[in-house]
Length: 312
Image: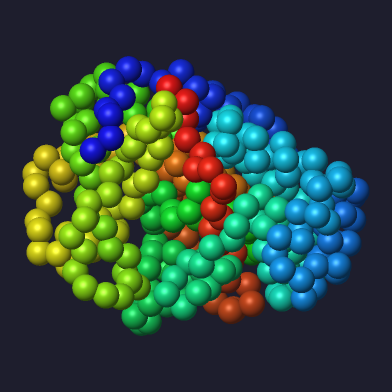
């Protein structure tokens, strides 16, 4: 178990949703020059390794914009929405190539499942499919969680007919609430839980992963409730009442109206989140009947050379 941080954090990632009266504080918009640089890079990068995007964009307006975005994600509040990507202009393959290139400039895009999928499709595939056990493939609400990887990107291609608002909350703000109200939860948080993802293969999991980790003066959070429930079920080690209380408390805090921030993502918006500083969730939605109109977001997981965390 790492050293337990027992003093509140004072860091830009400690925020409340009510701190942001206007979305201009946390959004950036692609200009025509940015889009031209991205399009040129997409054409030149065809058939090249992913790291070529760094070279192609480094000295362009788009590169400068993405550098600022990355600083906000790793040293600031931990989230940014990048707006203005003309999704209707591209074929599905071209859009994925451009999106993958953006992620490759920020870091290393990593697979999202056992099949090696690099760009995930967040859409409702119907309750009849076995894969629909994964919440992102349904139209239901998703509980607060973080994803695998240092960063997660969600590109909105199409909105639902109604509903589906994105919700985010600062996991460092949650930590400060735990310190103030339930310091007895700290040992559980640092000892961690057994986790197993639904599409994982192999034997029963036995090791524990901490929800909060404090190493080298930096605090980071990894919270995956569905993987925790699956891990404990597969291992045969039941969750204790205290462990359940801790999980439920975090989820309740994350949904408090004054703490969470709601986002109505529009086509062409890309929500980037620092998984170590932010938990995200969504409301349920109602969709269109026509497949070509159904809600669709493209998800990307990105690792950075150094794990982004909050300084204490």
